[in-house]
Amino acid sequence: MRILVLTEDWPGVPASSGAVLAAKAWAGVNPAVEVTARALGGGGARTADAWAGERGVVTDAAGLALVEAVAVEGVTLLAPAGGQTRWNPAALGAALRTLAQSSQTGPVVVPVGDDEPAGDATALWGGDVDAMRVALRGLDLQVLVRADRPLVGFHGMSNALRDGREGDAALAVAAQAQEERWSAVARATDPGARSSLLGPARLSDAPGTGAAGGLAYCLAAVGAHLTPASARLADLAQAGDVEPDVVVAVSGILTPRTLDHGIVPAASTLAARRAVPCVVVAPEVHVGRRDLMAAGVVGAHEGEEGEEGLVDQLARVAQTWTPAR
Image (cartoon, rainbow, N blue to C red; front, side, top):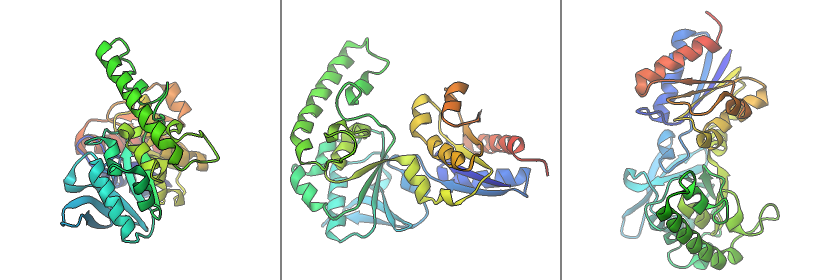
């Protein structure tokens, strides 16, 4: 019997450690089971921490670190410099220029998830979006997102800001100002941005452009391709090469939003391809059985935070989903 475990960060346990613990927990219950555990990370700025590979930094002319870089399977996976947890758009833009000038080969992957950047997202362009677009023309730039909202409009960034707090007058004013500001940016930027024959005619209407406080849009406007984080990371981990009998996703707190855009879609898609069960382990589960079933998940199990809680819950799942010795 084969088990495939995909992990993102668990409270108190990074994704890479979670993968090791998963394999050990299953072996303790049934050592005859073949367990393949792959750490994917969460799709946000520190995703590269979950991956093994040659590590380095991209610096500016003065030797100041701009971003961290990990070489994985022919791909360069970026992370903010100095262990920062949010992207500095200006530093990221400078790093991308440096990579383009160095004749970078292979895709450059920027995981932005859906977290606000540390600064104005348009600072990525260095004040000239057209020049930035030309500078990055030869770069295969891929951006990992964990949201499908567009930049502007009824379902855009401003709507997400107000979601569930429509009665807050101050928030409504802030959302309106944000909408006006990004609408002006889009009117000036959309005409020069790469467009697709499929999907919306305007880049600012495209799914995912509203992710990460508009940073996803700013990257797409200079030629980046936006893609769901979990699916791309699972592909990078070659998880599709495994032929499992059960797929297990070790997730963070499971909410309707993370159910749609976290690690679960990658796990359930792989399970569906093989017509096998998909199971989720999470510290908290805030979705109902109907939503789980719609997402292709047959069971969700809650565990305590920390290594001990994760190992204990994984052992329980192993007892449930694998036959006796």
